[in-house]
Image (cartoon, rainbow, N blue to C red; front, side, top):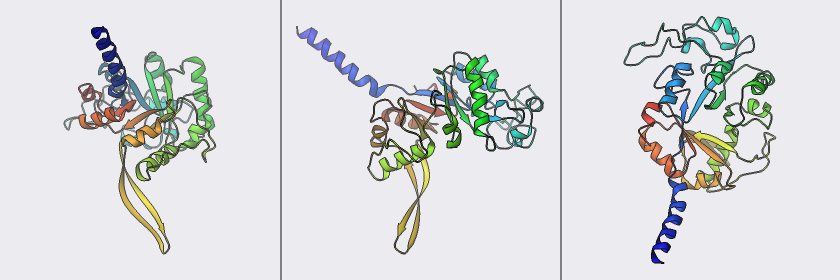
Length: 297
């Protein structure tokens, strides 16, 4: 009888501890931007080989309406071209070297080796079983046009179980229909986090100024540590203080108060930050180097 009770107690203890100690899923930032040329098929392949659970990619819209993987506002940042993505057609972009400026140990080891800017369509077809977080970056694209392209993709190759959209521009998130998985807006996430950390208040308001109501299975993303400016209003004017917004257990508990929310912590690039994210109960962590992150687990 004592043995049975001991086994039962051990089982209960294991059930109680395991959710708290569960490792967060590794999200490869831009396909592993520290390891290989970012947002490329080659980088994504190696991120998967390095045990990344989810791939974060960045997309922009070309002049002829294709969504391609590219992050900066100017092609000169990463390629041998120049100008915004929106000034170029898909065929024009295929003439560029997507690894032109990638450097390791002061060597441009991938230059002139055939790296191309891939389309979202190509990537989703090439990795049919991979989960993706897709960051919409196009600074000058019409949200409705992007949504139409995404909808067409969804009808052919997108899977609601493996695709989730993110953007720092809420106009893109607002334009996406509710049946498409998407993160909560950055502004909303920042408000909840700031209230929880700085004012010790958990405010998960049902109706926000962006016109959206709270959805089930909500997804939030924000940096583990973020430099911010706090503006205070006084009788004789305003005061600005620079500080750092850092997640704590109270904040994480606030976001997960409803029980159906998941949190992605951004900027997890050390074993110590990974340990902190795990102890906080983060569901996902974004890393620049899946090669290093696989050793933290």
